[in-house]
Amino acid sequence: MRFNSKNILVIMLFMLIPVTVFAQKEVRKNIRKGNKEYKEQKFSEAAEYFEKAVEGNPNSKEANYNLGNTLYRQKEWDKAIEQYNQSNALEQEDPLRVSEGMHNIGNAMLQKKQLKESMEAYKMALRLNPADNEARYNLAVVQKMIQDQEQQSEGEDDQEQQNQEQDQQQNQQNQPQPPQNQEKKPEQPEEPEQMSRDNARQLLQAIEQDEKETQEKVQQIRAQEREEKAEDNRRRNKNW
Image (tube, helix red, strand yellow):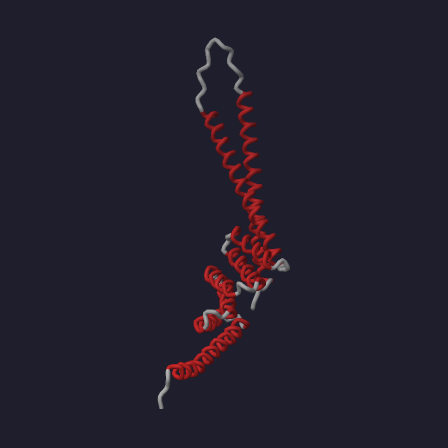
């Protein structure tokens, strides 16, 4: 019996169907195993299953997104961001899914202390999903952190300028005085000496006050960071 080219093509297609179905089953199997390990907080094992699923089907939205979440739990911030971007590319027709990806990118950026990038990611998440109250809260926190950093930087600049002025004044005080004219009535040494001590005391008090304010700002920022970490532990990352 002879087969024409059309019959051969049909036969080849039927031969490929079982292979494709088997591959899809393997992908679903690895995703289910990955989800199981993730729920048990075995993130390393979960990542292996999700990676296998992505290898079997690079266009699997669920596998890509869940792999991003698993990498986030492993504190692999850069890899997690890369995976979320891949997931967003697959979900480009679903704004809500992309919003979730941008939200998690904002979380990863925040963990990296990249505040401005984190702020932009949260803004994008809110543009795509204005009902995301967690993203709105996180955005407000990041904006406050940026504001505190800018204020601290300004305070350090002012402190440096004050230190320079103090050094200049101290150098002027340490310069030798010209010899007194013998014919002039000698000045009483107590008065200028007493004035110098007063000035020094005032400068010292000003410096101590500035240092105190700077330390208070640093403590506030550290307290804010501890609060953010605690809040992040209480609020679970968005899952599929």
